[in-house]
Structures are given as structure tokens and as C-alpha cells.
Length: 88
Image: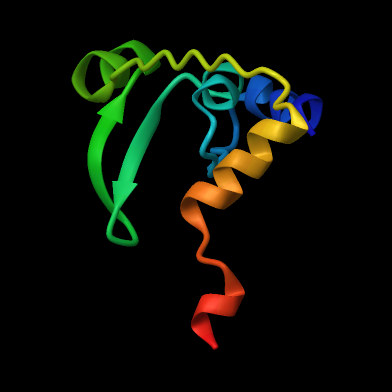
């Protein structure tokens, strides 16, 4: 799909309007982009760098997980769940 859009855009005889949630995809396929809010009002319009400077915020999330042992799961269950017999 990217090659099709790229071929259309190279000819510069047409405008191509794309919608995406991916900044990387937008940067790869366009020279100008905008952020739309409320169904069509432009919040920001310009180059990818302009949009990043105005609206961009980077977040880095680091998650470390380990395999949970069976006895640990039993402890969690005992701590957070009420015994069904108490509810009767």
C-alpha cells in the first residue's frame, strides 16, 4: 500500500489524504500532516517536526516481569479473595 501511495504522491498531480494513528507511518508517507480533533477541526498542521515540537511528548515504559511460582499465586488468592463458604 505504501508503494501505491508513494507512486501517486510522486506525480504531484493529486493530493493524497490518509488517516493513521501511527506517527512513523505518517512521516514515511507524507510531507505535511495534521492533528484532527472533534471530527475534523485541525488542532495542528505542518511538517512532522513542527507537530512533534508543538504536540509531541515522549514516554518510555519499562516493564520487567518474572515467572510467578504456583505457591505465590495461592498466596495472592488467599490474600485478596474471600472464601466462598463465608458468603453462604
